[in-house]
Length: 485
Image 1 (cartoon, rainbow, N blue to C red):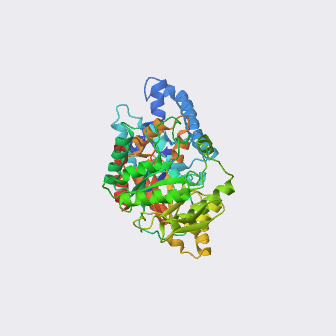
Image 2: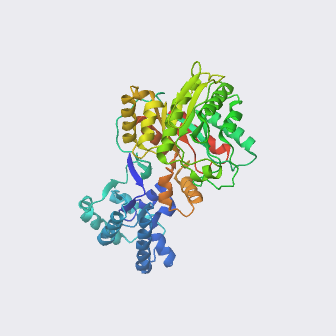
Image 3: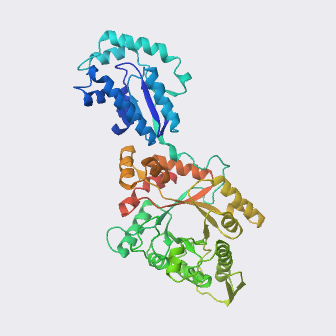
C-alpha cells in the first residue's frame, strides 16, 4: 500500500498508452488532474491538436503553480519526460512546502503499443518508439532529482496530510475504558423545528449511533466562533435537566461551565439533582471562563486570569465536599461554604472534567479532577506529561485522570463528497486551511486518527461536527463508533 498525502504534487511519468490517464481518474477527482491533452482540446481543435501544445503547456504550468500556491492536490498528467518542466514543478512544490511525488509507469512496451493502437487517433508508432527511448534514458536518475518515487502498479491510499498526528510521537498511556469513547457536543441549535424537538431528535440519534453521551456549551449567548449572537441558545443546565428525563443511556454534562457563572454550592445542587433525575449519568465540566463580553453584559465581574483560576480551584474543592457525607465547610480564596447541606446526594461519583490548556489549568486538573479536556491535539504528549507530573505531586494515580479532546471535525463518505463539504462550509478561508482546522477526512480517515489519539492516551473525544443541524448528520458517525468499539 502506497500512501499519498493530500495535498501533494503528483507527476506522472510514462509513454503514450502506459495508462496514466486511467490511473489518475481512478484515484483522484477530475478537478485535481491537470492534463495536457484536455488543455489542448480547450485551446485547440482537440486533444491531438499538436499545434496547440505550446499554449496548452503554458496554461498547464500556470494552473500547477496556482494550485500549489493554494496547497491543493495537483496531479500532472503529461508524459513527464521533459526535464525542464518536471524539475520546475518540483521546485514549485518545494517552494510551497508540498510533498513531490513521481509516479512511474513501467508498463510493458507491447501493452502500451496495443493500447495506443486502440485509440481513435493513435500516436504514430515512431513517436512512441522515441518516447520509450527517452523514458529509458531518464528512468534511473529520477530518484536523484529529489522526488518521492512510486510505481503505478502498487495499491494507492490517499490520506489527508493534516490528519497525520499533529501531536507528534509520545508514549502510550493506558486509557480508563480501554477504548475510545465519542461524546456528541451540541454547540448550535439552528436546525429544523423548535428547541424541544431539536434536543429530543439529536439525543435519540446520538443514542442510536452509539455515542457515549451528550454535552452542551455553558454560555449565556452564542459564541462568535460558532454562530451569531441572536441565535436561539438554551441555558445549559435547563437543557440537561430536560434530557435527563429521557429513557436513554447517554451521559450528560456541560463542556464547560465557567466557574464565575454560578455559586459553587448551587452548582453542586444542580448537578446532583440532574444526576438523580438521569439515573446517575451526569458529568461536570469546569473551566476558568474566557468570554468577557457575555459576563459583562449579564452583570458579572470578569476577573483577571489569576483570580479566575483561584476561583476554579475553590470550585474544584467545594463540589466533592457538597456531594459527600455530612455538612460542607470550606474557606477558599474566592468562595466559601459554611455547614452547607445538599440533598439529594448524587447516585454515584460525578466525574469532574477541567477544560483548558494553560499550565495552571492542567496542574489543577492533575490535583483535583477526574478528567482533562483539551481543544485539539497539538502538544498532546507535553500536556499529558504535565498532567501526570501534577497528579503524582498531589499523590494521585495519573491513570485515574481521563484525557479527552474537543474536536470540530468534517467528515465525508469519500473524497468527492468531502471536497464538496469543504467548499460548502469554508467561507472565505482557504480550502487547505479550513480542512486542516477541522480535520477534514473520510470515515476511514477519522477512524485511523482516533486510534492514534487512543494510543497516545486519549480516552474520549467530544465531537462537534461542522455544520451539524439534523439527526441524519449524527447518524453518519455510527460506523466510526462501531469500528472503534
